[in-house]
Image (cartoon, rainbow, N blue to C red; front, side, top):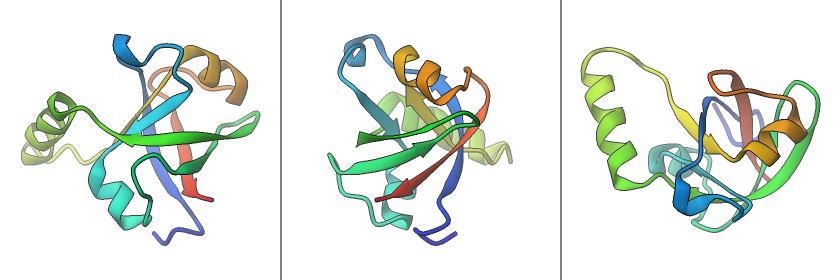
Length: 102
């Protein structure tokens, strides 16, 4: 997908160290595909709303887990979002949302 159409990602809870920071975390590969720099604003689009938020790359532990899943032919990507942002855009853990470069 190109950066105008965005990328669909599965929602997970953010890490404890990220609570209250108003950030999302995604796979560095997706950041590269969408030409998103670390700390850039991205648009997160849920079923009820959309918002702009700072994007950082996943923690190394998430990247390792995703690589293990890829090797088992489970091909999905994740986004870590806090509960405040999930509530605002109208999504829950396990749902898919769209992220795109602003």
